[in-house]
Amino acid sequence: MTDDPLEAAALIAVDWGTSRCRALLLGKDGAILAEADSADGIAALGGNGHEEAFDRLVAGWPNRPAIMAGMVGSRQGWREAAYVEVPTSLGALSAGLLRFETTRHRPMAIVPGLVLHSAERDGDVIRGEETQLVGLMEKEPDFEGLAILPGTHSKWAAIRGGSILSFQTFMTGELFELLSKKSFLRHSVSESADDLSASPDFELAVRRSVEADLPFLAAVFSVRVRQLLNGVSGDDNLAYLSGLVIGGEIAAARRIGLRRTGEAVRIIGSRSLARAYKKAFNILGEEAETLDGTDLVRAGLVVIARANGLL
Amino acid sequence: MTDDPLEAAALIAVDWGTSRCRALLLGKDGAILAEADSADGIAALGGNGHEEAFDRLVAGWPNRPAIMAGMVGSRQGWREAAYVEVPTSLGALSAGLLRFETTRHRPMAIVPGLVLHSAERDGDVIRGEETQLVGLMEKEPDFEGLAILPGTHSKWAAIRGGSILSFQTFMTGELFELLSKKSFLRHSVSESADDLSASPDFELAVRRSVEADLPFLAAVFSVRVRQLLNGVSGDDNLAYLSGLVIGGEIAAARRIGLRRTGEAVRIIGSRSLARAYKKAFNILGEEAETLDGTDLVRAGLVVIARANGLL
Image 1: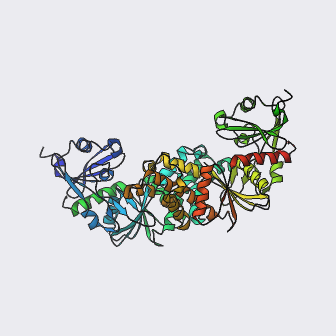
Image 2 (image 1 turned 90 degrees about the vertical axis):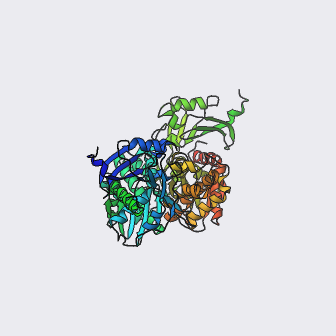
Image 3 (image 1 turned 45 degrees about the vertical axis):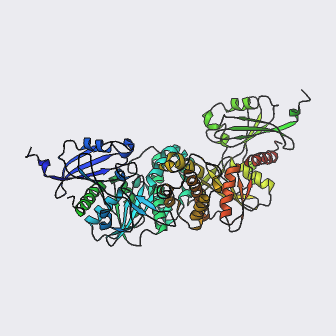
């Protein structure tokens, strides 16, 4: 067993979200030695059996400390890791790491989420995406601008001077699903279509939402009207609806002033979604770079582990 | 049988929507002699059996001409009544009445819907609410201002000089249902609560949406945050969400400029919903009068029947 290359492992890094649990076995240098993945998301576990689910997932791996990020630190997770308030630096975020041991004395740590307090709009929370922001700041230490993490609940974060200054959640992905699959508009759009953001109707909707400042609530019924009066196809109409929600998100973010004019934009996420957001920015005459989210989670967990002597 | 008071009937007036069919037997003066109601909405019928459903509903009534409004004139209805384009006067709308006979030679008529063509936002359609607008113009011939018909799909119409000039659909009621019952936010709100608009949280949400111009898409996630961070109750949070959608609708309508400053507002609809909209306007320091929708349907059908010699 001494020849087992996995014995060189120093840390287990875990991205444990609502629907999945993903673990990486990492070397001292942060290189990936092994990967494991399960459907034991925090929602499926229903508040129980986190240790057993973790043990099952890493059963064949050597016993190493683990650092985890995501809903595992929520009230329904393994342990609740208190939110760290923004603005926050990497140092303050790292100091908020929740540490404990499993029943078999394995050292464990959970990265805290972020909280924003705001009298104007009640505040906001992030749980999991903070680790990708740390990963971005590690890869681009001088980055100043906006990081966008699109998804079911899309997160926008303002980063300057090595700190996360502010952020905002938009329920964009969830609204798109509800409108395209559960609302009256479902009769006017396809169930799915390839490469939505390549459609001219995506561009039209983005321009109307941002350049013409058409309010989302006044725009959305037009998906039905386009089909009824103009015979727009389900595929083109799904692209239009996608442009309305993404364009609406960009317009709303502008109005609340998250980003300074001309600041850089990084879009962190799955390929197709990140590409759609990048396309929306390009339509508006702006640049945006896309980055792979899973890679940034690993980078963020490594940074926070190092800052806490776990690696 | 000659003593039957129903023999004085001159017209059957029908409000035939997606989910219900309501018929009134009217005298020459428009007074209600009898009422009937069924669950044979246009959706339930699925495109067939309209004549049979109508015959069942009015089975005990004398044979009289009928005038109908609502989804009965849609593509899935009994006969498709082509839309009349706005701006339109009562005369032009009445001239668009679709007339036909049943297989047993009963004279029938369907009120046309309205269509708005717009290069900026694809246009819009109304089917059914036009009859309530005619009813309003009959009751208040000099009315100039905005008529709001809240509901699943809320309709705003600008009326001036005896004409319907423009209108806009907002999916407000449907969005409220989707967000409160089908979205992630359902865990943060009660299923239902009495008198939502009386809650201070309704007022807060209306003020934020309209006075502070907080974009709807940037505001809606705060329903979750208020519960998580501030322990806001499900009832208060449902009131807040109601204030966000109604306030968001008012803010969006302002931005697209449907109403001239200071113009009168009439809210036409069910008591609780009309009261919530009135309350929202009052919070914003504006007056708004509420009117009963079913009464205006009858008034509108009588006016259009008279203009076409059916009564």
